[in-house]
Structures are given as structure tokens and as C-alpha cells.
Amino acid sequence: MDQARLAPDRASVTLVVEPIPAGHRLYYVALLVNEIRAKGGRPVVLTTTSAAESSQWAIHLGQRPPETVTQAEGKFSLHDIAAISESFGARLTIIPNADHHLVSIIRQGWKGPGNLKLFIMRAEAAQPGPPLARMRPAKTVAKRFLICIAGLQPRVQVFALRNPLSRRTGLLHWVADPITFQGTSEQRDAMRQHLHAVSEDRYWLGVFGAINERKNLPLIVEAIINEPLIGLLIAGDVGPAVQAATNPLLSQFIASGGVVIQIAGPVNDLDFDSAIGAVDCVVVAQLTEGSSSIVLRAAALGRRLVLAGAKSLRRDAASLGDQAIWVPLDVGAIRRAVQRVRLLPDPEQKIQLNNEEFLKALT
Image 1 (cartoon, rainbow, N blue to C red):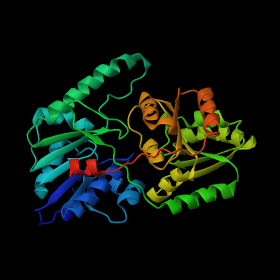
Image 2: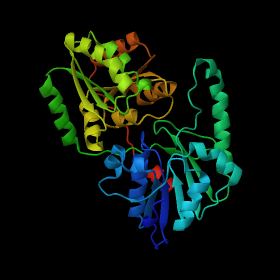
Image 3: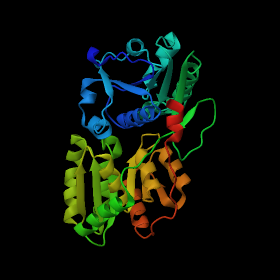
Image 4: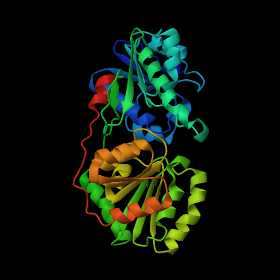
């Protein structure tokens, strides 16, 4: 623990806990830190040295770094968090990624000072392999039962992430996935002009985010290999194995007349939002269930979407009307969907997003 960071002013400390920099975790932390400051509080982030030195930290928290306390990666049990919170006399402790703390809360409650707020990223059970697929609904029911019981503990509130495109009912306290944008429409137009300067009269597809095996980039490229009037923009961290599997397909795509622009990750928020707003259509192809910030960003920026695979993506497509097409996770189905959207004008529908629900619940 970084003892030098412990300051005597304890009156309005809110401790925000996040040891892992991957995914959207530090984006959520940045939203919370800024809101706590706006309310006149003193945010302190409990994290790891590796997270504080990561590129994601620089992107989301680098411009105005928060006060931090660092712990070893194995020192983030509920007991450890309570001890740090006690050392600051925190009025509130927030764990934005708290799925694995549910059982501990039920067993021992919250021993730290003030109140504890937990944010559950996925109220559904993890996606299992085919032999265990039938057990997923039962596991989801069990997880939601744990969320309800954890929320009954004294001085504890538990919130579950929901897709802003869907309405949720029941006993859980649902909070919409917060989405904010960086940059202006002029900056997005400038990125679009850059794409068309690279190659005129192309229909630009985009694949975005942390692109691991679950995002099926090779499948997407295979679907467009023989579509020469398409440009493909890939923006974000592409895993080494995914890049190796995709490169031969990209070569075939380029040989057939396609154009590829790849913006290697990590991509800062301004460039990321500008890139999404610049393409004609965003493609998301995955079996992982749950809210997708890429889908939400693209929808709010008025882009068309081709969605493939997960049932949650199928529900998103239904909510978005003619702005999105859902197909099975199949090369031929994705190819036909791309061919179809190329003939359509820009969509009229544009969803409205805000982060007020998230910030009001957790701070």
C-alpha cells in the first residue's frame, strides 16, 4: 500500500476500487472520479501499479490523474478493501466491477466505514461451452438471487448493468450502461473525409474495440473478401493470435480490390468515437451475451449496424428497427447482410444516451 498517499483530510473521501485496466473498467472509474469531484468530494482510486501504469489509465485518467493507492494484485479481497477504506475514513466505497464479491458480501457483510456500492457488470451467468449451455439459465437465476441477497446487507447497495436499449423489471436495481462521447460532429466528419480521401466511392465497414477471439474478426473479413467496393476500418487492440489468423484473409481482401485501414490500439476516446462516427456501418459479431458499448455508440452516432451471433445482439437489432440487421454467426449470412446494407441510405433513427442514471446510482 502506498502510505505516502494517505492524507489527513478524511471528511468527504469516496474510495473507488478497480485493480484491472482491461475493457471498460477504467472508463467507468473516470466517470465516477469526475462526478465525485463535481460534487465537491475527494475521490481516491484503489488500484494496482500495473493498472496505474497502463495505456488505458493514460487514456481515461491521464489528463487529470486522481489520488491513488496501490496494492498488490492479490490484495483485493473484501477484507482488504474494507481496511483501506477504514484508513481513509471513507464515507462511501464503490466497486464498479464487483461480480466476484457477491458471495463475500453475503457471508461477512460490509465491515468498512460508511456505505458500500457494488456494480454488477453481468447479471447473466458466463457463457459456457456447448456441453454446459443448457445450465446457463439456471446459473443466471442463481446469480440474480445472489445479487438480491447481497443487496439486503446493511449499508450495501447493489446495482446491475442493463443495456440502455432494453427495459428491465424485477427485483434487481438496474442501471443503464453509461455512454459519453468525445469530440464533435466536425471531427467525425474530418475522419470520414480522410477515409474517402484514401479511396473514393467505397462503403466503409468498421470493427472496433478490444478485438479478441470472441469478436470473430477473421469471420468478418472472410465475409467481405469478394466485395471489392468495400473499405474496412479496424480500430482497437487486436490480440496477436487474432491478428495472425486475420492477416492472410486481409491480404486476400486487398488482392480482390478491398482497402484496409488499421488503427492499432489502444485508441484514445476522441479518435475512437470519431472512427465509429466516420464509417457507414459497424459490424459486431460475437456469441458473448450482454450490453455492447460499440453497438450503443454506433447507434447513437447514427451508423448502420450488422449484428451477428448473440441473442442480446438480436434484441438490440429489434430495438433499433431498420438501423440494424441481425444474422446468425455465419460467413454467408454476414456477407448477405453487408450486401443488403450497402444499398440502404443512412438511417433516420438515432438513439439518445446519457450517463445520469449510472452516476446518480453509484455516487
